[in-house]
Image 1: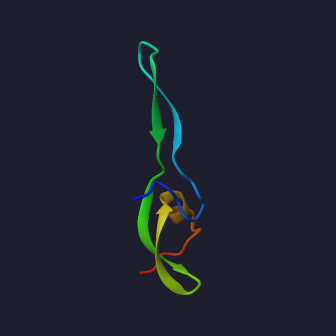
Image 2 (image 1 turned 135 degrees about the vertical axis):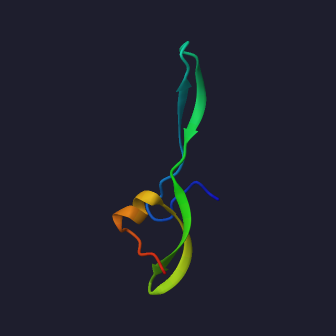
Image 3 (image 1 turned 90 degrees about the vertical axis):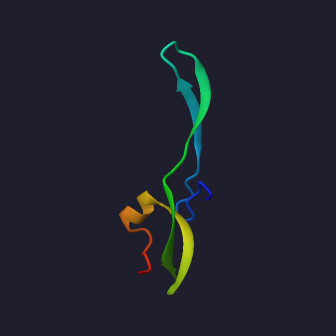
Length: 63
């Protein structure tokens, strides 16, 4: 599954993991992407959508 929202185009972000001894190593933050069936132009379609878009109502789920 891709870590990319097809609605709001959110993807992975990178940064540093900082240990207690202040050693920095690279890490990533990925959005919570779910593969769901949504209604697009009146027809159901399977898309990868982040949970923020699902919760805010940017897409309508097909049930």
